[in-house]
Image 1: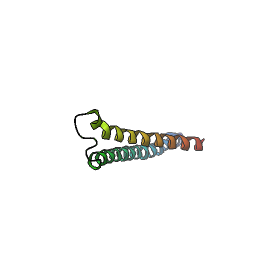
Image 2: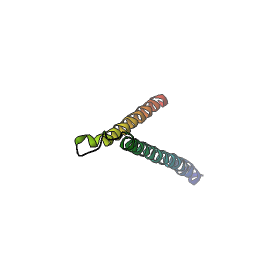
Image 3: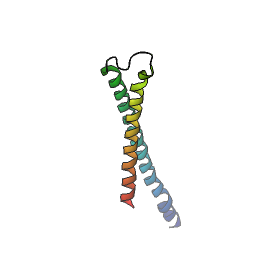
Image 4: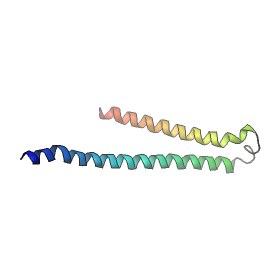
Length: 91
C-alpha cells in the first residue's frame, strides 16, 4: 500500500507535468517560428515593394531591417502583454 501511494503521489504528477511541459515547449517553438517568419516577410516586403527608396550605400538602406525588427518587437510585446493578462486571469 505504501508503494502504491508513493507512485500515486510522485510518478503520476510528474507524468502530467511532462505533458504540460511538452505542449508548452511546442507552443513556444511555434510562436517563435511565427514571429520569425512574419519578420522575414516584412523584410522582404520592404525590400521589394518600396522601389529605390532604400537603395544605395546610404544609411537609409538599413530601413527595411529596422522596420522588420520593429514589427517583431511589437509582436513580442503584444505576446508578453497577452501572457501577463492570462496569468492574472488564472490567479
